[in-house]
Length: 532
Image (tube, rainbow, N blue to C red; front, side, top):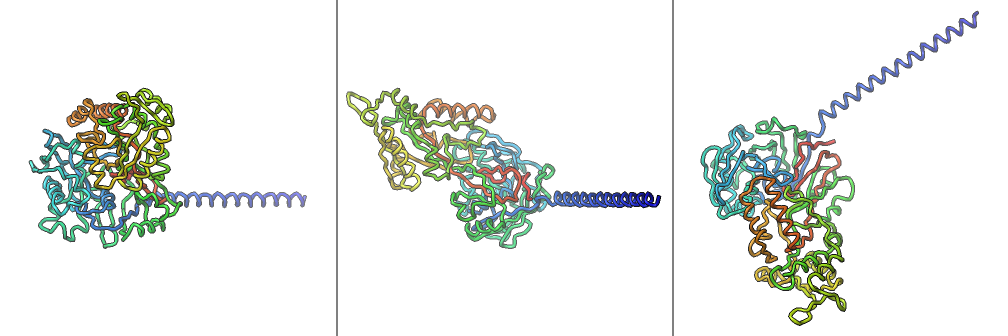
C-alpha cells in the first residue's frame, strides 16, 4: 500500500513538472513571437528611407549652369521640366499640361495650374521664359542643356499659364527638347544668376528639395509643396549626395560602402571597385557605331552587294573582341527600348546568304576572290573603307577588312586624319565609311537619312515618311510609320549597324527595387527603391 502511495505521488510530481515545462516553453514562444513582430514592425517603419548618391568634380547644383553630367543625373530627383520622357521613350506631361504645334516653327504650351515652388510661391509662365533666356545666354553655351534651346528663337508669354515658343528652323519632335529643368524667376530676383549664393540650393517644384548644402554634400528631403505628392508612394524620404574631387575618389567611396549607386561608361570599372559586393545593370548609351555604304557611287549601288557585306560581318565577334564587351551589338539607330522600335535584333551573319546575294548580283568566285564582268572587263570585288584614325574604330575597320578578305571581298582601309576624314564626309568619295554618331533625345532620324547623309541614301518613300512624321501625334500611327521605315532600311541596307555603347549602372547590394535606368534618366522605378 505504501509503495502504491509513493508511486502515485511520484506520478503526480512528474505531471506537475511536465506541465510547468510546457507552460514555460509556450510562454517563451509567445515572448519570442512578440519580439519578432516588434522587430518586423520597426523594420517596416524604417525600411529603406535613405539612400546615398555621389557627384565627382562638382561644380554647381544649378542645373542650368552645370557642365557636369553627374549633376544632370541627380537633379532629375529635384527639378522638373515642361515635358518628361518615359522609360520607353514617349513624351509625358510634367509642368506643361499640354502642347500643340500651330505650324512647323511654333509651339503653344499650356502649363499645369496650381503648381507651387518649394518655398510656397506659385509657378508661372515667367519662370519658363526666365529659364529659357538664361539657357540661351552666352554664359550657358557649354551647359549640359544648351543644345536643347539652340534652335529656339523666341518665347512669348501669352498669359500666366500659356506660352508661345518659336523655333529658328523646323526641328522634328521638338517637344523632346523641352525636357530641361525649370527654375524660379522670383527666387533669383535681381541677383546675378551666374554668381550668387542662391545657387547653393535653388528652390524646386519637384519631388525632393535641397534642405542642406554644407559644402561637401547635399541633403534632399521630400518637398511638402510638390504638386503630385498625393500620388507619391515612394519609400525613399531622404537622399544624401556626397561630393568627390575625382572619379577615383568616388569609386573608392563606393567600394567602401559609402554610396548606393553610381554610373559610368568606363568598362574598366572593376579595376577600381573590385569584382564582388555590388550589382550591375548594363544599359544602352546613345553612341551608335555603324558602317555607311555608298548607295550612289561605285559597286555598292547594288543592294544585293550591300546585303552580302552585311551577311559577312559577325557583330558578336566585333563586340567581344574589339569593343571588349563595352558595346552592345546594334542594328537600327534608335535605342531598342523605344516604343517605336520593334524587336529588330536579327542575326544577319550568314555566309551562305552572302554567297547567294553575291551570285544574285552577278558575281562569281574564282581564284580566292569574287569577280564580275562589267563592260567586257573582268573586275575584282575591291572596296575602300574610310575610318577616322581612332584606335577602336581602326580596330573595327581592320576586323571588317580581314573578315571580308577571308571571304573573297578585298577591302582597303584608309586611316584618315581628322582633316582628311572631314573631306571624305564632304565629297562622299568612298565605298564605305565607319562612323559613330551620338543620338539626340528625340526619335528624329534626319541626321542619318536626311539630305547629305553618309550613305547618299535617297528613297522617295522613306523621305516622304520622314516628312509625314512632323504632323503625326497618334502613337499607334507613329509606330506604324517607324515600322515601315525599318522595313525599307532593312531591305535597302544604307547602313550596317555595328554597336551601341554601354553605360554601367552599379548599385550596392543593400539597394532594392527595380533599377530601370535609361541613359537620359537613371531613376526610372525610383518609387519602389528601398534599402535593406
